[in-house]
Image (cartoon, rainbow over all chains, first blue to last red; front, side, top):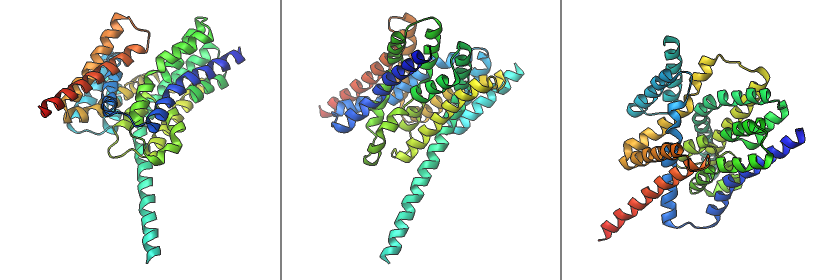
Length: 102
Length: 247
């Protein structure tokens, strides 16, 4: 059982690490065409979009209303004031307070 | 005089390095808050499933990929073989290929040596933070960021396994919002600067939702297709603008 798990972990490590490493080796060695570079420059934005939606709507299944208020805080504060630390810690705090209140 | 200048320069470089290190740690704090409760629940689940402490630790320390670790536990319990679990892991984690490719365009000369380490630390979260760092990406920043995230993930796992429900569920539940709040806080200033970026991000989210709903792709590839498709659309409309300028 233990040996079986170890093989599984090593296998999972390989198939996770190789896709993480390979692009670095390819991109650093070869000069990539401009179009490809443009495409890659959009990846952070579109990745964020897909990471947020639809996951955010089921972030905390046991307290959806509270988490929606928490996320609203992050959106409103982030839009008007910016920054990362305050929106993140604030939304956690607001979610917690809402949970106590609701 | 030369010596004085020299030591002054060294001092400024050192100061800049320290500053980048500090920035990296600061940028990693939201990830720590987000990772700890998830890693702890992984540790708890691993214990419930019957894994040893060492195996649970190795899962987080060697694989270091949240969703696929949970999936592996679920499949193990369902009696699925290692080969199939590994294949599913490849599918689930392949989105990091895109993220690494994008991040690789920002690698500077002095980071090259650290590529094996930086590549290992690529997660949805470290990628998002590193991609939107103000100014150039530095090795001090990204390594501090990744090391902190990694420590939180591994430590959280061991803590969850060893201590179990350390924090009350209200608190861990609230902390579950942290990573989403972080993604949103990263995206908003960019969206404010460029409407196109906002549209592309929302488009990607809509694609992700619709493809997930229609269920025609294996898990993990829904997100990859959404990211690639909307980035492709962004690139395509870039070119059209350039052509118009030429005419």
